[in-house]
Length: 486
Image (cartoon, rainbow, N blue to C red):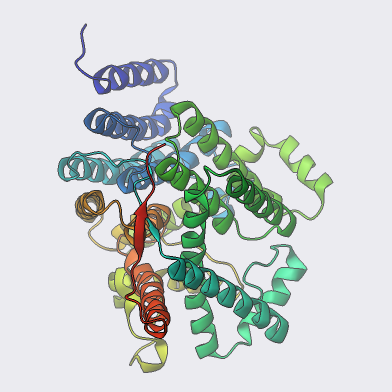
């Protein structure tokens, strides 16, 4: 058999391997494994198709990041269920244990994930087009622009430092019981306006941090800047393990570093991407489990009693499935959902609570109230599958996957035309990192990030550069030189 490209043999081999694996499984195991294998084959097809189309590994690609995130959120709970002997074990999310989901029920429920991913993959591949993104051809911002970025990074970091000293609020606190409860109490005592401003500033700080990282990585052909980057990475790793707090910022930082290095310095190899991606997932899972235990001996004991150690432990992938399945059961039982759940996609871009004629409630908060966990400090993400179940279910999943695929395809085409721009590159990488929220929260949740983080960052940057440029009688310019290819 002869093939004209790499896609056909890779997908053919994946299909053959999947069919062989299913043939050696029991009927119950097939119900669980089949949806996951179908999703793996679809994402592999998209990866190989884009690789053949552009003749480059499609790592720096917002649609590919979206597909991979959807794949992990879909497959991981299925793996948890399989390794625990077709059940969710004692280390799993408690809600899933209570549901006692059968293999048939879980398999058919996950067909929603298959349909959503299929719709996304088809539309993204159809409208994305072709064309390469060159390595290192991003304009270098002027010195004044770099100074403004550093200045705001330090000012915002200083704000959170002062906030902790004056109010006790720590945005990166430990998840250990006592420290977490103290911090939760401090958050509760904050005035509403200050709470709202603080949450928005934390998101804007992330954009400035990403901009600073872009500047550092772009200079990593010089040994001293490479050393600075390595020290920064080491500091982030140490902080994540010592604090035992939120993992998101740490994981996004490492992903951003890899993306920027791939884009600015040298393309990363497939072997490195597979190894580092797998390692990052393992670290993410381990940190989630590790931060929940203050007694290391108890951690070891619980892991030894489970069939697959940390890979059978409760995690946010399981939590999203639990929420979706619970809402599905509620709808099946005839529950009435409040009207605001249907506009949950746009809730974050509505005006502040103080000027709203009704209570501004996110779907995740409504669910916490339903299960009696509101105000406890726990946070449960909602998920696009849950959002669709509340609405038109199967039809809505198809539409959401298609619309998202089309939007991200157009976004990629726009970036390809503006790939030399510093800000364009920054914003593209930002949405590559945040695109997983389209699955973890809901399809248009990124509008909130655009309105409250990206646009304020841009306004602050432009106004500050204009002010300094006016003071020096210069025209503000974002970039003056290009990084040549290595």
